[in-house]
Every structure is written in C-alpha cells, then in structure tokens.
Amino acid sequence: MSPHDIVLTPTGLRFWGASIPYTVGRGGVVADKREGDGGTPVGIHRVVGCLYRADRGPKPCPWAEPIGPNDLWSDDDTHAGYNLPTRRPFSGSSERLARGDSLYDIVLVTDWNWPDAQPGKGSAIFIHQWRGPFRSTEGCVAVSRENLRWMMPRIALGTRLIVPEAMAL
Image 1 (cartoon, one colour):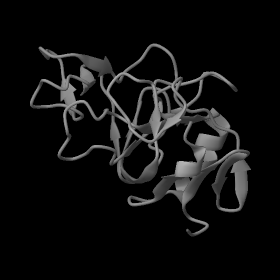
Image 2 (tube, one colour; image 1 turned 60 degrees about the vertical axis):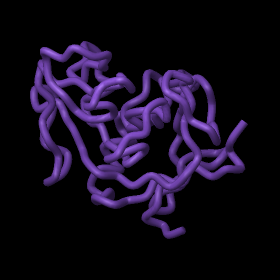
Image 3 (cartoon, rainbow, N blue to C red; image 1 turned 135 degrees about the vertical axis):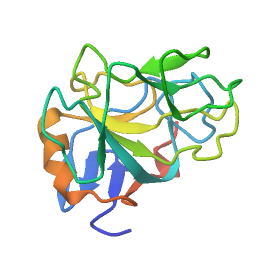
Image 4 (tube, one colour; image 1 turned 60 degrees about the horizontal axis):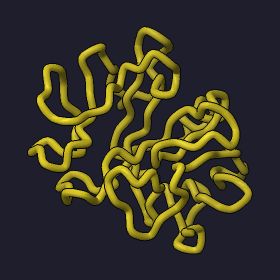
C-alpha cells in the first residue's frame, strides 16, 4: 500500500495522510458481491474514470467526462451493456447519472466487474458524494462534498481503492 491509495479502514478512508469519514453500501462490506445486494465489495479497485455534472461545477480533473440528461449506467445483468455507461433510450434496467440530487455531481468510476462484466457480480462501484454521515449507499463508497473536492486533484487514473477483507461482515 502507498499513501496514494485510498484505503477503507474502520476509522476512515486513509488517503494522502488524511482520515476521511465515509459511508459504504447498505449491505456493508462483502466478500461475495452480487447485483442488488447493496454491498461494497472487498478487493483492490482501480479508478478508471471520472464523470461530472458540468452544469453544477467545474471539471474536477483533466480526464473527467461530463454527464448529460440522457446518460445512464446499466445494471441489467441480462443485457450486453451490463455495468457500462449507456444513454436513453435504453431497454434494460439502468441508473440515471444526471440525478436531481447532488450525489453524482462528481463520480469516480472503479474497475469493479469491468470491463468484462460477469452477470450477477454487481455493477457500478463508484466513489461519490454522500447523503450524509451514516447514510448508506447502494454499494458505492461515499464521502462529503468537501472531502471529495479535496481528493480530486490528488487522484489519478489507476489510483487504488483498497477494501480489505478484514472489513467484510
């Protein structure tokens, strides 16, 4: 592990010498991730992209891509586009990226079950803004807006999110 890794610990995300409060999925940290279980998967997950709402703030890093009103993320494990970004119209189950709230104003995309997704293993493990302390996600890792903005200039493509097995339920 290096100081440039984002490491999930019982007391905070350890990153660049800081301990950052965070939340995980409603299913807790899980060793055997399944689609829809609300779990945050154990493992080493690399940051492979950044999405952001250009209508809500500046580009957070040079490699960020804007989210538009028709942008979705497929969570349909029966669809060929499973665990990939897609656009409306889309016939499968998906999550809207241009949300009415601010959770996805900045989204770091990890390589969980990507790019060759295995059906049922879970989709879209992001790092994004939280609803608030102790308010779980659907499986992602979330931090405050202020902490996410602090983290952004320090994160690069390939930065590792490490979720240790010892954190699993």
